[in-house]
Image (cartoon, rainbow, N blue to C red):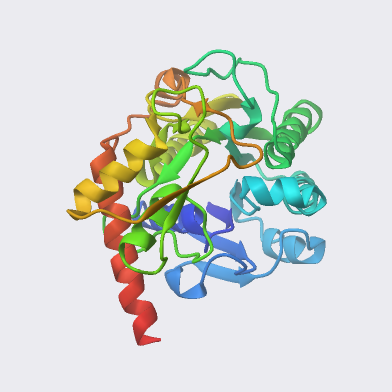
Length: 330
């Protein structure tokens, strides 16, 4: 059987494509290339350029009957942008996900794995936050993802669509083999921005808010290496294919680092400081988000291996250096 990866040219999706191919899976990709370049896709993947909101395209891709699983990454992810333009996020993340889910039901797709987010928790009352914590997103981004979780829940009950939603915490790092990484120059991920600043692609980086109720006043996040996140997706795939039930699982390490701690880690790995400036808080940013991720370990058998912050930073910096060399040749 084959796996359809939506958003397969994007940051996390491209890692998923390589991992599936490494494991001998047949892979199809739908991506409109709005945030990821086509060159990052390996030739072994069957790439169809297009939008997941296109019913006719979905029918064309799914009609062969060879695809048993959809892993859905396509979507918009910048929290402040979602606050500024919520309707765009509800269209791209919710309405189009509804179109994709409907196509999965229409074509009898057995399994659906969804790229969700810790932003569904909003400002959790307790940390680490577990999957049964109340969901109260503070941004349209988080709400748009939560609405898709609801659609999957209800589709499972009504149509028998087996599904898993993985709630990501802060994804960082790059493929240890150097094949892919965060390639979107407009990405707002903290570690990418710090690496770009270090390499002279930005004049400075900005820390948004220094007055949070945290030890150093900056936001605390649970940073997970992208390779460990991809391993969780494959564990979810095995779980569903082996008859396991639907569910929601956090993906994080259970410990957090502040923005300033991450900045120091980048400087430590690189051996030099970077230009940091300080600004006001961004809309929609909670003070701390740290995962309670025991459920993924006990149910899916997930065993993360890349939790060292310096390792995460080093892989990200190595990719940014490679990307800079590539862009200089183009």
